[in-house]
Length: 168
Image (tube, rainbow, N blue to C red; front, top):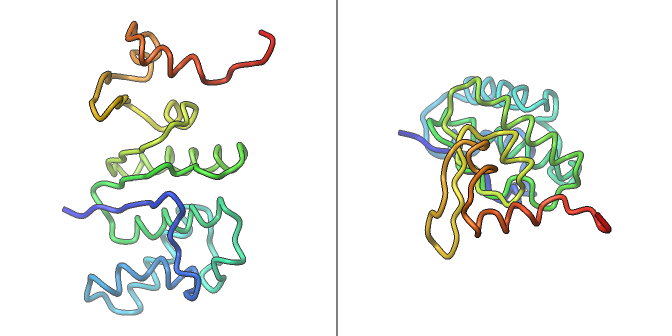
Protein backbone atom coordinates (compact mmCIF):
# COMPACT_ATOMS: atom_id res chain seq x y z
CA UNK A 1 0.00 0.00 0.00
CA UNK A 2 1.30 3.45 -0.91
CA UNK A 3 1.22 6.61 1.15
CA UNK A 4 1.98 10.24 0.46
CA UNK A 5 3.32 12.84 2.85
CA UNK A 6 2.89 16.60 2.87
CA UNK A 7 5.68 18.22 4.84
CA UNK A 8 4.92 21.31 6.92
CA UNK A 9 7.18 23.50 4.76
CA UNK A 10 6.22 21.85 1.43
CA UNK A 11 9.84 20.61 1.01
CA UNK A 12 10.09 21.50 -2.67
CA UNK A 13 13.51 21.25 -4.27
CA UNK A 14 14.31 24.80 -5.34
CA UNK A 15 16.54 23.76 -8.26
CA UNK A 16 13.75 21.70 -9.88
CA UNK A 17 10.72 22.97 -11.75
CA UNK A 18 7.24 22.44 -10.35
CA UNK A 19 6.73 19.59 -12.83
CA UNK A 20 9.99 17.93 -11.84
CA UNK A 21 9.13 18.26 -8.13
CA UNK A 22 5.75 16.58 -8.68
CA UNK A 23 7.25 13.89 -10.92
CA UNK A 24 10.24 13.14 -8.67
CA UNK A 25 8.65 10.30 -6.64
CA UNK A 26 7.45 8.68 -9.87
CA UNK A 27 10.88 8.86 -11.46
CA UNK A 28 12.57 7.58 -8.31
CA UNK A 29 10.21 4.73 -7.39
CA UNK A 30 8.48 3.53 -10.58
CA UNK A 31 9.29 2.36 -14.08
CA UNK A 32 6.73 4.67 -15.69
CA UNK A 33 7.64 6.18 -19.04
CA UNK A 34 8.39 9.91 -19.22
CA UNK A 35 5.17 10.33 -21.19
CA UNK A 36 3.17 8.73 -18.36
CA UNK A 37 5.05 10.72 -15.70
CA UNK A 38 4.32 13.97 -17.57
CA UNK A 39 0.65 13.01 -17.96
CA UNK A 40 0.32 12.26 -14.26
CA UNK A 41 2.12 15.49 -13.31
CA UNK A 42 -0.33 17.54 -15.39
CA UNK A 43 -3.30 15.61 -13.97
CA UNK A 44 -2.26 16.09 -10.34
CA UNK A 45 -1.43 19.78 -10.80
CA UNK A 46 -4.87 20.25 -12.35
CA UNK A 47 -6.47 18.57 -9.31
CA UNK A 48 -4.97 21.23 -7.03
CA UNK A 49 -5.76 24.13 -9.36
CA UNK A 50 -2.27 24.66 -10.77
CA UNK A 51 -2.59 23.69 -14.43
CA UNK A 52 0.15 25.20 -16.56
CA UNK A 53 2.69 25.70 -13.78
CA UNK A 54 4.93 22.75 -14.71
CA UNK A 55 7.82 24.98 -15.85
CA UNK A 56 7.66 27.41 -12.92
CA UNK A 57 10.26 27.36 -10.17
CA UNK A 58 9.29 27.13 -6.49
CA UNK A 59 10.75 30.61 -5.86
CA UNK A 60 8.13 32.04 -8.24
CA UNK A 61 5.22 30.62 -6.22
CA UNK A 62 3.25 31.92 -3.26
CA UNK A 63 3.19 29.92 -0.03
CA UNK A 64 -0.23 28.50 -0.84
CA UNK A 65 0.87 27.49 -4.33
CA UNK A 66 3.93 25.72 -2.88
CA UNK A 67 1.66 23.75 -0.53
CA UNK A 68 -0.58 22.78 -3.46
CA UNK A 69 2.46 21.63 -5.47
CA UNK A 70 3.45 19.50 -2.48
CA UNK A 71 -0.07 18.04 -2.37
CA UNK A 72 0.17 17.26 -6.11
CA UNK A 73 3.51 15.53 -5.46
CA UNK A 74 1.93 13.44 -2.68
CA UNK A 75 -0.93 12.54 -5.05
CA UNK A 76 1.40 11.61 -7.93
CA UNK A 77 2.06 8.11 -6.59
CA UNK A 78 -1.70 7.54 -6.31
CA UNK A 79 -1.54 6.78 -2.60
CA UNK A 80 -4.08 5.02 -0.43
CA UNK A 81 -3.25 7.41 2.44
CA UNK A 82 -1.79 10.92 2.73
CA UNK A 83 -0.32 12.28 5.97
CA UNK A 84 -0.52 16.08 6.13
CA UNK A 85 1.82 17.66 8.70
CA UNK A 86 0.40 21.09 9.63
CA UNK A 87 -0.60 21.80 6.01
CA UNK A 88 -1.60 25.40 6.71
CA UNK A 89 1.35 26.39 8.92
CA UNK A 90 2.69 29.80 7.96
CA UNK A 91 -0.18 30.68 5.64
CA UNK A 92 -2.50 33.66 5.92
CA UNK A 93 -6.22 33.02 6.54
CA UNK A 94 -7.17 33.23 2.85
CA UNK A 95 -4.50 30.72 1.77
CA UNK A 96 -5.36 28.54 4.76
CA UNK A 97 -8.96 28.37 3.55
CA UNK A 98 -7.80 27.55 0.00
CA UNK A 99 -5.65 24.65 1.23
CA UNK A 100 -8.52 23.41 3.40
CA UNK A 101 -10.79 23.46 0.37
CA UNK A 102 -8.24 21.51 -1.71
CA UNK A 103 -7.88 18.86 1.01
CA UNK A 104 -11.66 18.62 1.45
CA UNK A 105 -12.17 18.32 -2.33
CA UNK A 106 -9.67 15.44 -2.45
CA UNK A 107 -12.10 13.33 -0.39
CA UNK A 108 -13.73 12.54 -3.74
CA UNK A 109 -10.64 10.50 -4.61
CA UNK A 110 -11.35 8.24 -1.61
CA UNK A 111 -7.82 8.63 -0.26
CA UNK A 112 -7.56 8.34 3.51
CA UNK A 113 -6.15 11.55 4.94
CA UNK A 114 -4.53 12.03 8.32
CA UNK A 115 -4.18 15.74 9.04
CA UNK A 116 -2.02 16.86 11.96
CA UNK A 117 -3.10 20.40 12.81
CA UNK A 118 -3.76 22.89 15.58
CA UNK A 119 -6.15 24.78 13.25
CA UNK A 120 -9.69 23.94 14.34
CA UNK A 121 -11.27 25.63 11.33
CA UNK A 122 -9.20 23.39 9.03
CA UNK A 123 -10.06 20.34 11.13
CA UNK A 124 -13.77 21.14 10.94
CA UNK A 125 -13.53 21.63 7.16
CA UNK A 126 -11.72 18.41 6.28
CA UNK A 127 -12.42 15.88 9.03
CA UNK A 128 -14.95 13.10 9.28
CA UNK A 129 -13.35 12.14 12.60
CA UNK A 130 -11.02 13.99 14.94
CA UNK A 131 -8.62 12.91 17.63
CA UNK A 132 -6.85 15.01 20.23
CA UNK A 133 -3.45 14.00 21.49
CA UNK A 134 -2.27 15.41 24.81
CA UNK A 135 1.06 14.51 26.42
CA UNK A 136 1.59 11.76 23.85
CA UNK A 137 -1.77 10.05 24.39
CA UNK A 138 -5.02 10.08 22.47
CA UNK A 139 -7.44 11.61 24.97
CA UNK A 140 -10.51 12.14 22.80
CA UNK A 141 -11.79 11.02 19.41
CA UNK A 142 -15.03 11.28 17.51
CA UNK A 143 -16.88 13.29 14.92
CA UNK A 144 -16.32 17.06 14.91
CA UNK A 145 -19.71 17.46 16.60
CA UNK A 146 -18.75 14.99 19.35
CA UNK A 147 -15.42 16.74 19.94
CA UNK A 148 -17.06 20.18 20.17
CA UNK A 149 -19.61 18.79 22.67
CA UNK A 150 -17.10 16.91 24.85
CA UNK A 151 -16.88 17.36 28.58
CA UNK A 152 -13.16 16.53 28.63
CA UNK A 153 -11.55 19.52 30.42
CA UNK A 154 -8.31 19.40 28.39
CA UNK A 155 -10.21 19.38 25.10
CA UNK A 156 -12.56 22.13 26.36
CA UNK A 157 -9.54 24.25 27.33
CA UNK A 158 -8.03 23.82 23.85
CA UNK A 159 -11.30 24.60 22.12
CA UNK A 160 -11.81 27.71 24.26
CA UNK A 161 -8.51 29.20 23.04
CA UNK A 162 -9.77 29.36 19.47
CA UNK A 163 -11.39 32.50 18.05
CA UNK A 164 -11.29 34.57 21.23
CA UNK A 165 -12.45 38.11 20.62
CA UNK A 166 -10.81 40.62 23.00
CA UNK A 167 -13.30 42.35 25.29
CA UNK A 168 -16.04 39.78 24.82
